[in-house]
Length: 587
Image 1: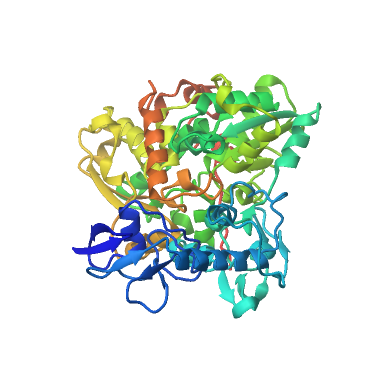
Image 2: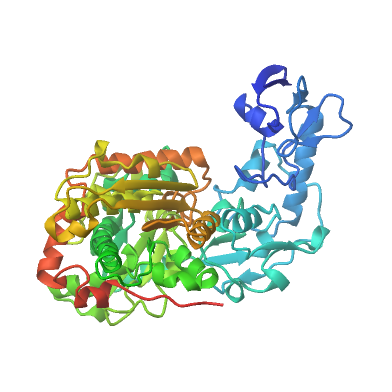
C-alpha cells in the first residue's frame, strides 16, 4: 500500500493504482470521456487531467499511476481552465444540434459542459465532416457528432474482440469507424450495440423504429401485440429517475397498455418455452452420445443471444452444430403469437403485428434474418430498445411514476422465476439446470434457493459441475454423470471458452451472452452502465425470481397448456418448425 494526498486528503491505495482510481476511492470525482472501466486507459481525451506537485505539466489521471506521498490537486484554476479548453475544443468540432438530438439531457459531453460552466465557445472553426451510416438494421452512425473519444474502439476490440471500429487518420482529420471509411454492413459487425451503449454522445445509436410502431398502433386494421424481455423491468425506471435496479414491471405493463397495444405479453413465457426445448435438446444429445454411441456435437451452446450467434457465424462457423437449434425467446414468441395465439383470438396472421421491447440492439438484426418467418410472415415485425420505449412513453405524455401496476395478458403472459433470470449472465444456465435436473431425477435441485452460485456474478468465465444421482428409470444412462457447464459474458470471453473446448477441456453445456453482465446491460439499455449498476439490475432480477410462486419453467401452467393444445411435446415436428432454426456461415 502507498499513501497519496488528493486535495490534501490522505488516501491509501495499492501500488500501481492510477490517480483516477485513487480519487474514486476518496469519493472525489474526476471527469472522463475516453475511460472504460477495467480496460486499458488511453489518456486520449485529456478531460481527466490533474495537477501533481513537482510535475511540469498536467497529467492524465486515468493512465498515470499514483506514487507514494504524491500530492495531487483536481480542482485548481489551472486544471479547471485546461478542462474547459479541452471541452470547448470538442464542442467547436461537434456537428450536433442538441435541440433535436435524441441524446439531449442524456449526453455526457453536454453534462460535462454544464458542470464546467461553459456558456460560450471561444473557438469558432471547422466542423467535423458529417456522414450518416444507416446500413445495418440495428445501428446508426453519425460521424459529425463523434468526439473521437475511442470508447467504441475499446469496447469493440477489447471487450467484444470483433474489431469493426478503429481510429483512422491524424489530428482533425481523424475518423472513427470501419476500415477505409466503409459502412458497418460491409465489415464484420455483430450489432451488439455496446458501442452505442458506451458512446458519450449521439455518434452511435440504435436505429429508431418508434414511428413505425406508432403507425402500426394507429392503424385500426392491425392487432398489435407487444412482448417485453426480462431485463426491461429492472432498467426502464432509470429513464424516469428511478434508481438503477428498481423493478417497474407493473407500471411498464400499464404504460404499454395506455400506449395503445392491443395485448401485453411477456417474453418470459417463451423463455420458459426455450428451457423446455433447449433442455430437452441437451438431454437428447447426451443420450445419443452415451447410449447410442453416436458422434454428437458437444458441448451444446445456448442460442438466446443474436450477437453471439452472428459472432459464431463469422468467426467459428466450424462450431455452428454445437449451438442449440432453438430460436431465441423473442423469435419463439413471434412464431407462437402469429399461429397459436392468432388462432385462439380469431385473427389472420396478416392482420397481426408483433412488437418486441428488448435490451438489445442485435434483436433488430435478428428479427430481420431471412429464416425468421415460420408463421408465414415475418415472425417479429418491430423491435424497440428500452431507451426507445422510454422515449415513446414520454411522447405520450404519461407520468410514469404515478401509473398503477398492471398485469400481463393471457395466455402468453405467465412465466416462472427461471424465465426472469434469463436477463443475467448465468441465468439461462441456471434456469436450464433447475428443469433438467428435476426431469431426470424427479427431485428438486438440491441447492439453497435454487441458485447455482458458481455461475452467478460478474466473473467473465464461470464454471460449475453437478453430479447426477438418483435418476428416474428412463434417464438411468445419466446416473453418476458429472454434468460440466460454463458461463461466459462478452465475446472476448466466448473466444476463450471456445479455444478451451478446442484444446480438449470437457463441457456439456455452455451459456454465452455478448453483453457485460448479460442482457441487463444490453446495447439498448439506459446509459451509463458500469459494474455497480449492473449488479443492482442483477439483484433486482433475482428478487423478481425469488418473489414468484413458480420458479421452474416446466411448472408454468401456460407452458403445459401450449404443449397440450398445440405443440404436442418438446422437439415435436410442430415445435421444430416454429421454434427451431439453423445458422449460416458468414465471411
